[in-house]
Image 1 (tube, protein in one colour):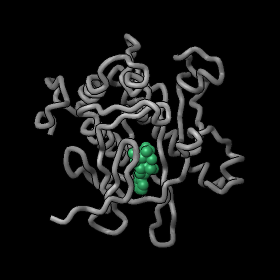
Image 2 (cartoon, helix red, strand yellow):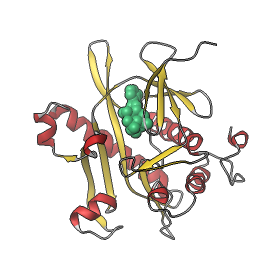
Image 3 (tube, rainbow, N blue to C red):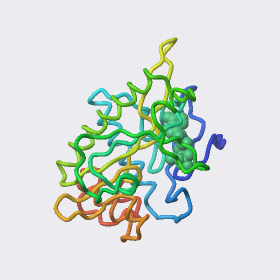
Image 4 (cartoon, rainbow, N blue to C red):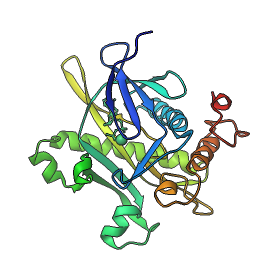
Amino acid sequence: MARRKKIYEGKAKIMYEGPEPGTLVQYFKDDATAFNAEKRATIEGKGVLNNRLSEFFMKGLTQIGVPNHFIKRINMREQLIRSVEIIPLEVIVRNFAAGSLSTRMGLAEGTALPRPIVEFCLKDDKLGDPLVSEEHITAFGWATQQDLDDMVSLALRVNDFMSGLMLAVGIKLVDFKIEIGRIWDNDFQRLIVADEISPDSCRLWDIETGQKLDKDVFRRDLGNLTDAYTEVARRLGVLPSNVTHATKPTLIN
Ligand SMILES: Nc1ncnc2c1ncn2[C@@H]1O[C@H](COP(=O)(O)OP(=O)(O)O)[C@@H](O)[C@H]1O
Ligand SMILES: [Mg+2]
């Protein structure tokens, strides 16, 4: 069988040419990075879990009418997606203070915010993904004012969906990051949610215990990352409840 053409290899995923124009195959690796890739590790089973979880969230978003790139899952590590022109911004939504917001504002982690706050960071590893304002975004032409309005509204819909889903399984959605891309339907362009939604890109805390169930487990050396992600998947019903380890792929297919 001919090998697929690799288009891009990033920190967590590889993009291959898709079977039809306008599609890509997104492969989820087991690689974990943090602090702008200063900290790295291979975490067995992470890619399989994120592929499954991103599928679950994207399908749910489709069901409530939030457009996104997901087409179908191909196998344990790969999914078929629509190819988009990525807007070079990380769109962050925060419900509670944590991470860089806590540092910047001097807020204790976990402080409830007065309302969800949307932030934009420039997607540029060399610069460390700096926080940028709407003024920077429109002046430098990364997105138009109309794009920004659409991005905020997409991000807030994702926030409501994800917050409700997590609340139902005893998890607090502290914050998350999404990427958004542009597609063309004939001459009509619109923005859709792309990349991934997974515990790599969310902060998820157990409501009762405060236990972290997201990539902070890796960033802050708090335990086994695969166990944390498996717990999220198990609670959401993405994995059968008797699975304790994601390192045995056959169990979760
Ligand atoms: N639907 C899509 N079409 C085109 N590019 C995408 C799509 N979804 C995600 N991407 C891009 O593919 C890459 C995914 O790989 P990842 O390992 O996350 O890369 P990075 O290290 O750049 O974050 C990212 O650069 C992301 O912006
Ligand atoms: Mg990425």
